[in-house]
Image (cartoon, protein in one colour):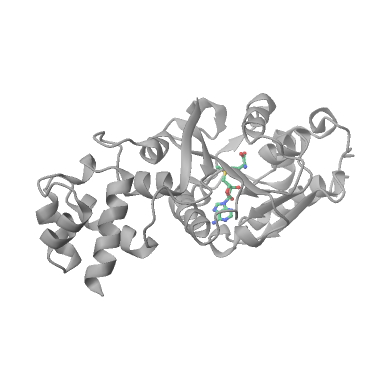
Length: 294
Ligand code: SAM
């Protein structure tokens, strides 16, 4: 005989009246699956801290990727999110999320599916913000997709508040001449201001991952830091960082056009290495490459 569902309330503080998350997980058989990057957060203080970091959640749409059993989702609702759209790939979580949605009429919409296949920039009404404890196995491709969406439409997202493994977070914020600086740093900082907010230790998750995590805020720029065609920028950074120890006159040969002309047109020293160029210099190279390839 199945147990009756607990009563969920819509009080201003979503925490106390909802059943404990551990009970929700046990009742719905939501043992964490590694293949889905499942590391759950149970501490409402921590999830509320993440939700607060996203700013005013009242207007527009808060998009959450991977709500799982709904820990961060509860925090978003408790912090005043007017409308949450939560995209979850694991069908086992849908019943638990439906209970949470029923407790907050009209405030939580659950989309069942793969977030990689969803155009988050078309969900709900603007302003749209994404807040998520991301599944680590697809965190980088998800972010690249959202950044490309921002390139098409700078107002697509008002902000992104995302948890990554610390190493990825450091790459996002990496500065020239540091070991963290790479393709992801250039793409992210070209389109958004990146701030590392705070670390979350592995023990805060169930089950604990092997690494520390970091919450990152990306504030989309009204326009990219410097003009450049996206595809050309991606190809130039791939070539340059593909051989990051080599000088540009060598590494840019991978582009299939003579590097000397690109380097001269961009006004960068031909002896420079990828990690010495700032974002604007990469944009200049991308414009020169676009011109040269015709
Ligand atoms: N938000 C919950 C929390 O903080 O406790 C769970 C976070 S857990 C790190 C990542 C979640 O993303 C899991 O619920 C997992 O099922 C979901 N997920 C994994 N891959 C996904 C995908 N491609 N699209 C949507 N959700 C995905």
